[in-house]
View 1 (cartoon, rainbow, N blue to C red):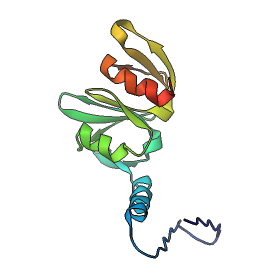
View 2 (view 1 turned 45 degrees about the vertical axis):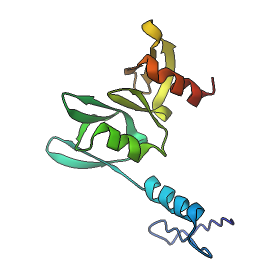
View 3 (view 1 turned 120 degrees about the vertical axis):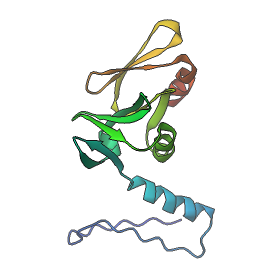
View 4 (view 1 turned 60 degrees about the horizontal axis):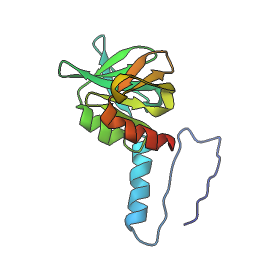
Length: 145
């Protein structure tokens, strides 16, 4: 596969063209990844529907049957369930840390062991999210430990 990138300042929007001899599994996966990289999260706050960039989301959790997206700017409610967001964000750097929480691993500032085999994840804004012990091995694997 050959990849060519052209910078064209006159373009208003990035355009990706995929040329292939035939549509095979590799090309399909590439197109899927391109579409996912352009996906946005939608959340509601103060009666407004807001479009969020995945990079801005620190973590996602569920409380009282509601799903909430936490950013440095505030908290947004999502109509999607946690497992749906987990599937949508799987190609990104998000990881499940408990039954009710997913964190953006790019936003984790530090990790510290906690009681009972859990981990305390300190996010870039100083908030702490606790990872349950059953999810700790996946976190360690992500770190290469």
